[in-house]
Image (tube, rainbow, N blue to C red):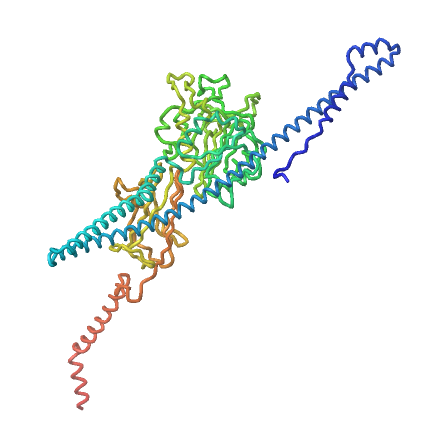
Length: 634
């Protein structure tokens, strides 16, 4: 039984019968003339003419049916060929996956074997050195104390020398073996790792899926794709209608990045629906989408998921003041100057922004007010978006998208730091505009080559997470004068907090910022302070930010939180939970400053009572005492 299903072929005699029917129902021109000449009755002539016209109509219908059948056969053959090719690709992919998994397991096994050999070689080498030293000492002792004059002693001496020489040679071989293993499994791996960093690959991965309207369009973007491959990316080209095209395999991403250059395709499989693409982003994947004036509704729905709305179909960005001189007269090939490019140097470098202007030809879009959106490029004040085939009406101004509200390139960074970039010009990626010269209308400046290539390089670096990546190395919380973190602290303790952050931009380096803040939270922030950047060495690839602070006078479970979210950088949300206890009974101060008035009042009352008693006892009236005594005597 065949491994693939065969599409049944239509019998060839159907076509021959159709052709025979056509010839039988279509009389030749001489036959028509003879029939008309022989007919005498007008009614008969009219009937014959009607029959001839009906036969012509039937013949044309049959011809159209034959063409439709032939077209169906051709399409079925193409589908069958495409399915065969796809199945071969899937079998090849599975075979490569099995081989890759076997290679990984083999390399892991080889690594463990090499480690055991290195350890065993080191131990053996040490034992051999010990034997050599011991044998030499024994030989020297024997020479100094023995009687080596007879022949037996000389033979023993020669034998010992041979043994010591063999041990030395074995030690040398062991040393060479250990060095070779260290070079193979340590130094070469380190060099490969350094080489991967120099290539500047993405921190997410290097697997890229490229979706095109047609595979034949691939040469149009040769420079752009060549730059990606030169940076170490593995590109897989496909069309959206390819069967079994899935972004996930066993709940894991099949690709790390997706480039969508297929705005015209209207139907997509469920694996490439907007919902599937959003799931891909939630899994940490990155997407670069380029649109055109005839972008399909599928990609419009996908853009709406990120608060981006493309303009109406067949509309283009028009600027009658900032267009290139090579424009065809519609003023749609606009020149984007540095004033219309973001000042965020993390996304687009300053040297690219200050360089050659860009050439843009495509559709505009309107970006929403989401704080996670990053506006990268926009139109000038004199630009607007409209359909060239329509005449502008007086009431179109209310719905017209114009000025800096016309977005050209907009990106969004999700909460998991995955990135999505929308570009309204597919022509911007083509070699034609990359190599084109730039000469703006009524401008004395001209450039031999546009800045599209450098701009797209920076854009893809940021989108594919080659730069703007932040990571937390460590964080420390300890009392002043101590170096170890405790699980519990006391209220009003003086502590020192520090966090170490590294930035990836082609390589890991120290992060420079002055706006990193720390919050100490228990339901609400009790303390919010800015962390000071601490000095670092040029060779260090990270920087510490710290602050000295006094804990709140409230006990409970507090969270030390660093929530750093800036446009262009991946998000940092570092949390450390610390328990803060109250004073123990023997830790309270003996006297409280707030109670000093009460202390004074109590002491003053005691002193006053003693003064009163003394005065009362020693300051009585003498005359009265004498009268009292006399009365008692009587």
